[in-house]
Length: 467
Image 1: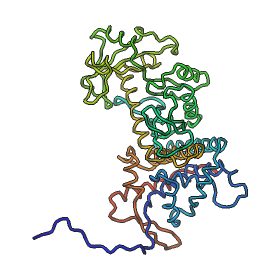
Image 2 (image 1 turned 30 degrees about the vertical axis):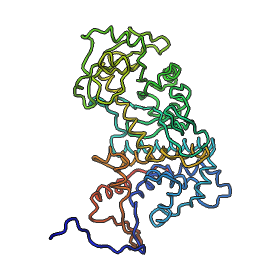
Image 3 (image 1 turned 90 degrees about the horizontal axis):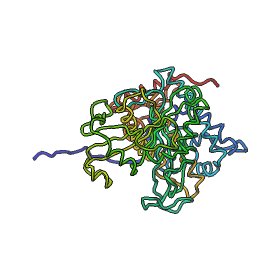
Image 4 (image 1 turned 30 degrees about the horizontal axis):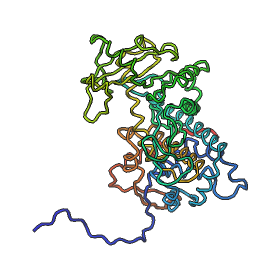
């Protein structure tokens, strides 16, 4: 009789030396140094260490950021970095990190955001010098000009009493942050932590987050570069769209593509459309989307109060199993989705504008990945500390995005954080000393050793900002 699936017998002990786990996360820590994030964070909360003693507050903030990018979920998870001092250096204790986050008030939070913007400018310059620069966003098999910003809100459940946590519209309890991502790279530009009962379509909150996101974009790209802002129907408030249009007077060339509710006037206009005005819709790779068509409703629906040049477009398609349908959809036998845009005629076909708007759905993936990078779980009862946690979570998302843009190639450039952690960041290694050097030796049989080694080599070759 032959045994199958047998494994060698092991004797497990906890007396190993010179072995480290999560060795690939050193890549994140070194990239924070290379982009100037560490130096910028050091300057931001300097006043939180008035006597100039103890751990550097900026270094603590970077260590928390690296820990979140690595998949940590609580401040106590800093122990992983702290217990591997030969790789990550001295790391603050958990109580020290708590005190730092608790001391970040509105002024310090603004300084952290400024620091993130400074590091982002360096990262983009490095991308321009080492490659072709920031990649273009894509939709319908085509590159989109300029930058594409996606905004959306999400619910974060709190399982204990936290300051400003409240009941949500989905009958849960927690927070309702509004977030903004750059579709070109996946960077997290801005976020606003809000109570769970905050409105989804609050124009003031959308304006606050958009302005914070634009402040994160380097000046030379913020002015003179087309910037498309996409939201679902929650971003369709007229005050928000008017603010978007007003930005043009300040040299920020913004345009919008936002969802629109299927109101009774919209339903009447859809019913009045003749069959010959419907055109086949496109998939994201540019091929035809089976069973889906698009048409323009401009001139058939009152758009009074919207910015001049606003157009309204509808897509109809056969509903997929499990789709949530309105009574109108059930009557028509088709699912309808409507959006408005101020992209003028001649700058893209109707099908292209629709598939461009549909690509806004990628923000759902950004949020899902962001929740595994910090803001899916808030650690404190205090709202201000959770605000600081959100800001460092956004910085962690940036670190992962910069790693992919500057250091990786192939399928890892578009991989989600889970794959990056499994293949690169959580790799184990041995530490050896020799020739006055500290060597990190990755296992010769690790399947992704070459990708990790090449990433460290590219990191070494990155141009550094002048100091």
